[in-house]
Amino acid sequence: MSLSNSAETNLLELLFTNADWANIGDAGGLRGSVAAGSFYISLHTADPGEAGDQETNECDYTSYARVAVARSGAGWTVASEVVDNDAAITFPQCTGGTNTATYAAVGSAASGAGELICSGALAASLAISNGITPEIAAGDLDVTAS
Image 1: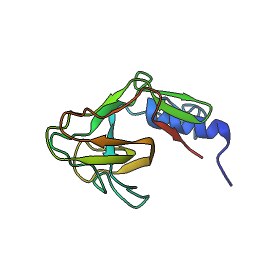
Image 2 (image 1 turned 45 degrees about the horizontal axis):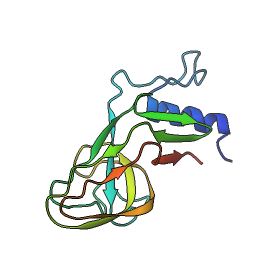
Image 3 (image 1 turned 90 degrees about the horizontal axis):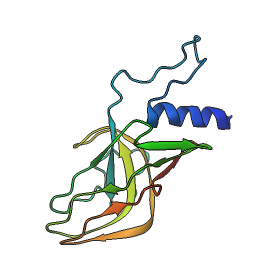
């Protein structure tokens, strides 16, 4: 069995925009978090895989850090079983070292081996070297539940 289109959309809304999922369990449904918090977007030099964590193949150029995106309608848009970022996700400018980012991931922690929520290949590799500021344009980080 697979989730229905409606269930996929509701699940993505619960996870990414912290919206309640009505009529699951009781009339109140599945509730969003009291404090929604953020997801942390990371860049990776290779597929972190489904068994990986946020540190698996993560970029390590000098000054690299994950970028927080609020779990809200201001951070994400969900439509037709797809969620995407509402604003550009801009990583810190490289001040040393080099990486080629080929994957992006959404995770639970600002640093360390946080839980990997989802990951996928970038539409185009990002060659990162001194002076380069990696960025994922608004609407370019798409997540599906299927």
